[in-house]
Length: 359
Image (cartoon, rainbow, N blue to C red; front, side, top):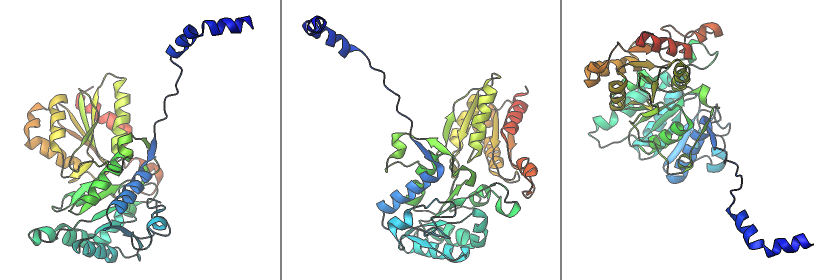
């Protein structure tokens, strides 16, 4: 009891000391968002924001999408905004293009971009060229989106990268997101754009979680089309990639750092229009360049980057020829061991970096 009285007598000083102490605080867990959920959020927010936005495609409504990217949207928005279509790409792509010409903003999902070949006349000849052919009188604000590139065990007809195919065509904008941040910000920008936009997602990335900031979680978050992102700064060599290959480059950079090689990694984000200025600035700093992509080598994205570097001011800064890391120049095999050797791996990036640096 006496001790308690003494505590109260000296309480002012005691509690003053306690109040000045810093209590242990657990660091808040970083919010993680999967690539798939980022796309779902983007569509949900844009459908809420603009009554002219709607989604159509095979199994996008009642089945929640073949890859569950539209999960919950049909139950929330109903048949007028989330529309299941027959298995006829040229049919529903044409409906979507017509709707865009009439003033709506359709999101046309291809179950895979390999199936977009069935609708390529609508994408190229109707969507991409109409604004130009009408002298700007008929804009076509449409988004074509879906999984692109190689998956796993689906062989030659379902494993093509269409980045070079569609970026070859004037009138289209072509986006290739790598992270959840990319997926959400780029898709929202694509939906708001007044031009036809191709959004090339990656099936193998759908379930991958990424840490995202409060800014990314905002409904107002968008990423400007046509601007690359430097994911990691470095001084010795520039690695330029898009989609899943960005992750390979970052992993290769970690491994190479242990050997004293400092890589700069650029996430392209947009294939067309190409942000060549960011790539040039990096090459002029590092004096070396490696491009990495999952598509075929001939007339590919890496080939275009190398040509633009050669034609521009950064060429005189190169201390060695640029090198491309690409998919193998063959139809994709079905056997897993062959498939693994047909798509770029981390070891291929490391080998190419050492080749360019002659180490």
